[in-house]
Image 1 (cartoon, rainbow, N blue to C red):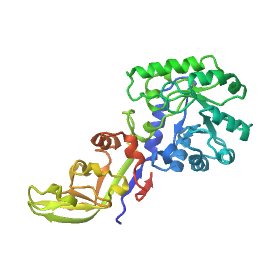
Image 2: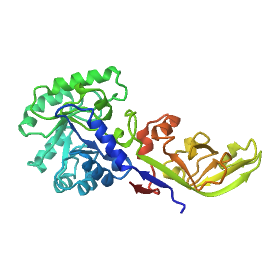
Image 3: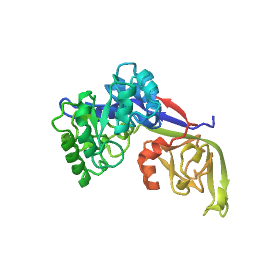
Image 4: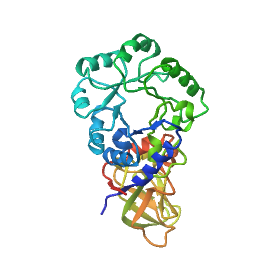
Length: 345
């Protein structure tokens, strides 16, 4: 079979949720962020596993994402929508029983007019300038909003992956100024905030990337393993080129495997000549350019021709790939292509 296999360890996912849950003290609830199709791993599978691990509240980015999560976890557990209540969302919010996190006067008006008895939350901007009501806007609306009984008030940290960044304290102060004394559950922390300690936890943390094995949760168990099948193996003589553009010239006689994945599967072309795959414990460098469907790999060091090679596994995680590309593990994880056979365990 020439289809790469993406193995997803749901027990590791559950273990990561439990470990992040253990970071919180007392009555703090640990939710789960399952947006972007469960960070590329299948929102239904991920949400179902996390519900069985103990998660009792979920977050998605847009209303449409909530449908698969609702089908997976049943009718009762709350699902919040970070993007709020957009034009045309009312039917989905009502039918799937989703809770929009309202970000503006416009969204508040839309929600109260179209779904006056439907639950909602509020998102505040504590300094990131991305989503949420700014302090002055909130001050003018707070009395009206609080009279409607919001389920949750939240904000989001811009620099939680750097615990020493002064922005964290600045946003914490701003969020407290806007919400201290209110009789409404509050949330500020995603994965990074959950790791920074109790002052950031409030009533609810909502980890995302840490559940899936990514930084900044360095103690996370790896969740994904990408195994790519070998289509053909050939001898390449010293001086011969490999791949498009002749960007690799063999410095000596080599054995080269062509494997069935490429940039159409989320393996960035910028990894050309830069990344290593693995055959068990043996490193096997990528040679030449990443093409749409194929990679060419140096397997000279192996005693026998391999049947598969690993891009993600025990020796290399999403953050290792991200470091090569000067990006973040989130992008690698959510960019994993749809051609992979996803196998859950």
